[in-house]
Length: 612
Image 1 (cartoon, helix red, strand yellow):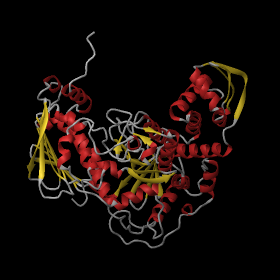
Image 2: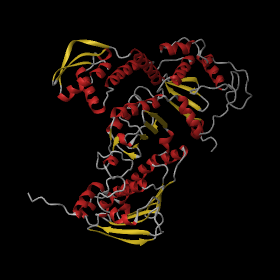
Image 3: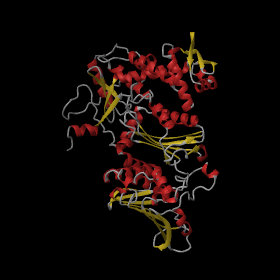
């Protein structure tokens, strides 16, 4: 081993650049964060050759004083924090003061700035490149704000340059960085040019429709059309943004944006809370999409825990986890068919007015409409619907023949009275699907999936009212665990007892399970206890008991639901539709499959080339 010696300033900067400057997208991220911290509301980004030849970023922020220009390119020089108290209460995106020094150590950098409170109209320029870290300040012409020009990235470190990808790939990564930051600041306009061609021009957004327009531009219009807007505030925390409907999912977690006080992060605690909120409604193997913003006091979150600042640490992680889970869980549960249909109606054309029809009127052609209308009794709460809601069983007795019921249902659809969101049933297809007509068009319902969700929610409500019932084990179960797990079980004994688990510590590394939830008596108790303790140690709480309990209830609901090829009467179909409109999460079955779809009149017209 050689003798210990201090590293040179140039070598130290290049080592730091290895952490900060990985590729052109890293440079763009650091410079854009400086623009936003400077209070800019307009940012322009110019690129050449995917950022490998040129990166130029201009803003209209507060600018840099002449005396601070040379210092701005030094390591650990920043205006964003000054003492330990500032470090524990960070409200800016950047704070380490390494970005500009690291960038200029591996490129040719030019910085021109004019401060907002400058005494004259003169701007000042400072330049530095690679090994020559000595800077000189000279006058320049520039409006208020700052321009940073980075040329020939990695010109003096060819080994790093060999790891860069193609121009197209590097530009796509820069594009992703710009999109993420554009979602974090709706009040800032972004202009991105590549090889002198405009790639994106995002105008500043103030109102909710303007924000939604930017979200649609970044995430796609399909995401916005299939998402919910949430805004929940409690315990000093605020969560707002957009989450996708369970029926709009992706094979990868590539459309997930989560911001904490404007900083985009990827945190295990957040991912776990979102995953739990979607657990009961998302198809297995799929991932939700969301753009969410969490706002809290800066002192309650530590952002200085990761070199790239992608992870944070919350002071009260359990509070944040529970808040995220409950807010998203409730938002997804509160969705009813009428909410989705009203959103689709506002986005499309208004429902068409239908001509009245009655038995005896011509089915085809344009014969005179018969105004004699018979009310359909199932439209009002009746004995069939009430029995269905109370018992969840089917009454196969039909007072009318199937044909007469269909004719009556068709007539009721054209009354001037309000039609329920899912309309009225008109037929059953292959004993599997219910065909119903509402104001918007045709509703197709998977009767087994819909009945399964209704039965499942009734069972969950009944269990929740009764609470978790526990039963003692005839033979207590002994477990050998680590000391950390034993400490957790001892400290959280009351919380575990509330979950139905009676656990006693008998040694430094041994536990005895004396009581378990009665509904899970046949489960693998040892694995259940270990999983619960692992969750509590990592997230501060555990949902394992509820998850296992819900899995059993879902299985019971699946077996208790109506099967395919069961012939239903029109009143029974309408009773199912009305219960779907009242039931939480009725848009998906217990396995995450959709229970109903809408074929609007516009879609049907396009299918049959009407009006073309």
